[in-house]
Image 1 (cartoon, rainbow, N blue to C red):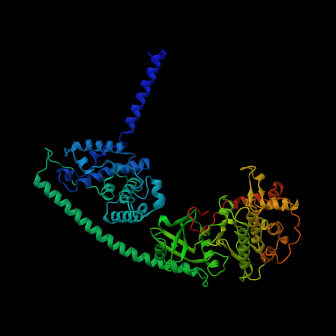
Image 2: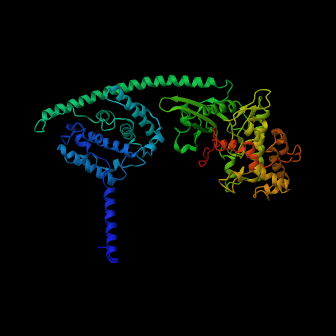
Image 3: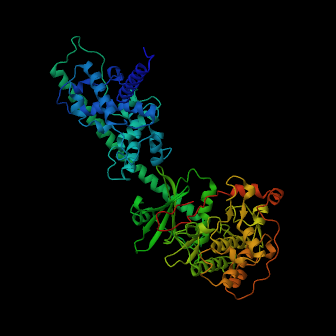
Length: 631
C-alpha cells in the first residue's frame, strides 16, 4: 500500500497526524483515577437537594481524595493546566451521576476549573513536594502529628493544629497565599498518613469528608423529606458540636503550649548565655526586635544567602543600619557550627577597633515548630568585600584605595596580635573576610575560626582550619599555630591586591592539581628576576609611585615566605609598609609549594584539599548590595 513514493508520503503524513491526535488526547485526559467516588462511603445525603449548603464543601473534600492520591504518585500538588482540570471535573461529574444527584453540582460548585491548576502564586511558590520541604523544612509538625489512625478526637485535633501552624507560617510569606491550608491538607493525607487518603479515618479527619452513618438504604433508594431533614440537622448539630469542642481544645492547647514553649525558650536562652564568657560585650537582642528591624525578615531586605544562613538588611529603633544574619538549619549542623557561633560572639563581642568588623549583638531562640535559631547582628558594610573588587573587572581599585586597604588590614591584625592579652589569631584572613565601608575603609571580619592563645604560649597545636591557599605551610602540615600564621595569609592578600590575581592560578589545567601555581611562587620568580613591576596590576603601572608599590610587593613576598623564621611579625610588616624601617633582603625560597615533589613528600596536597571548600561561617559579605552571596 505504501510502496511508491507518493503513497509513502501519504502514509507518513497520516501516521504523524494519528500520533499527534493520540498525544493531544492523552494530554487532555484526567490523570486521576476517580473510581473511588462510587465506592467510598461518603455521605451523599448532603447533596440530595440543590440548595444543600454543605454540598460544595463535601464535593471539594471528595475531590481532594483524588488530588491527595495524585500528589502521592507525582509529587505535584495540583493539575498541570486548565484542560486537564476540566477533564477531571467532567469525569468527577460522571462518577456522581450514579447517585442520581443534580447533574449541575460540579459546575455550580467549581465554576472556575483553574482553581485546581498548579500556580506559583497559590501558596508561597510551592508546586511540588520538594518545594514544600524547602519552605517548611524536611520535618514539620504535620509529619509528626498526622500519622497513623486519626479516628480519635485527640489525635485528629493534634493533626489539625499542626496544619494550622504550617498554614500560618506559609501565609506570612506573602499576601496571596490563599491555598496553603488546602496544600497542607493534601500533603498530610497523601504524603504523611500511611493509610492514604482513601482510608475513611484519614479522609474524615484530614480532608473533613462526612461519612455515611449507615449502609442500609430503603429498597426504592429514596429517603423521605422528613427523614432527610432530621438527618441533615442531626449531622449539622454534630458537626457544630465537634467544631466547638475542637475549638475549645485547640485554644486550650495553644495557650498551654505557648506557656510551656516560652518557659523552655527562656530556660534555653539562659543556658546558652551562661555557656559564654561573662565579659562578652555583645548585646542580646530579642527575636521581636530583629523581626521589626528587618520587616519580618522580608524577602526585599535579603542581601545575601549561602549554605549556613541568610543575611538581611535591617534598621534598629535608633536608625542604625545593620546586617542581621540568620543561621539556618542549626539542627542539621554538627557541634562545630554552634562552636563557631559561640566563638565569634565571645571573641569579637568584647573588642572594638576601627579595622575590625563590629558585632553589635546576637540572638538565640528555640521553639517546637522552627527549631533552634541563631542570629548575628553586625554594622552594615555598604561596599561589600575585597574579593568582589579583585574578581570584577568593572569595580577596579585605585592605588590609594589598595594602599589604604592593605594598611587597614595590617592595623586590624596588629591589634589582634599585640593590642589584646592574650593575643588572638584570626586563622582565616582572605579577601572575602575583608569588608569595605562607605568610605572604602577596610575591616577584618569572620571570627568564627579565631583562636585566643593562652598566656605565655608561643604556639598551639590545634585542629587545622582555614581556607585552601591561605594556610601557612607549618600550620597546614603540622597544626602549629602562631601569630605568623596570620602573617602568611596577610602576605597572600597583599599580593592579590597588588596584582589583581587569585591566590591559585589553575589556568593551565582545570583538573590537574600539578599545574597549580601559588601567587607567592609567581611573585617570587619576578622579584628574583628583577622585574617586580610585572607583579603590578596593569591598571596600576602608570598610576602609583613604582618604588612604593615595589615595597608593598616585597613585603607581601616576605610575609608569605615558606619558612616561619623569615617572616616578620605583623607589627614589623606594618612599619615596613609605612616606610619606617627597611625591608631586609628577600631570602631564597624552597621549591614552589605547587611543585609535585614538594607536595607529595609532605602530604601537603591531601591536607589542603580537605580545607579547599570550607564554607565561611560568619558572613563575609555583611553588605547592602543584593548581588553578594554568602560562601
